[in-house]
Image (tube, rainbow, N blue to C red; front, side, top):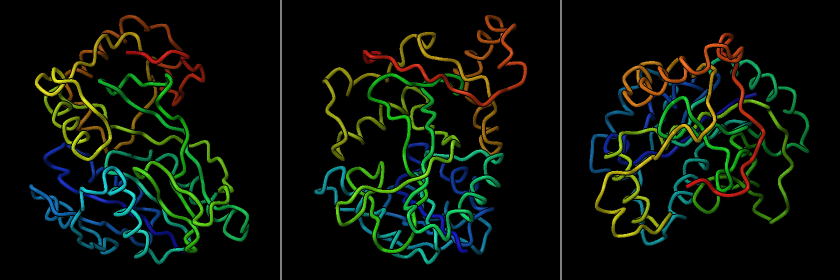
Length: 280
């Protein structure tokens, strides 16, 4: 059984994507890792080249922004076409896997290798927001998605590359891994988040108000979001330690929840309670 990791990368330094941490988080269980590097305004290409591993294979492409958000799935599929593994493990550049889940994921891939009924393996999402110790589970933030697919030419990325589908339109047959995917796309300094939002609008992800285009992003009161008491992937430790808003938030969490067993034992857990009305 061979496993290919793959991702896309463009302007990752400019927009503070933790792509090195993302790639390194699953590199131990991959036999190769394909990185589709787009035309960037920063040193993204050399950043990827700095990874000291003979598993890394780089392809380069020019992104066509006229395709809107679908440019992401188009570039994702170009990377997928280069993958030679039996399984293809996709991570976007702000998604990271915990090292404690690697053995389990490799075992699940082995178990499902001969079961041709399984097209994809699904993860539970942790969307961190504002702080590395707060996450979103309200409506509008999807909580499950596929990231490992059988690489047999029948599955493709679609839309803004948030998920996968069968090319013939039939539903994917998937298996839940019960492992977390750590999504860090909304944990940045307010100025960086504002730039990322402008970039998202240019691609076609969202439409901003005039005021949103001119001011730093406002996370609002973080206390309205659930607390994450568990550990993070080890590759993220330095970034978390250096994130001032998270460290300030953690101090308050430690004072308020000193009695919480989830905190004592650093349990990797998220609540199953969904919020019906979107939190603003």
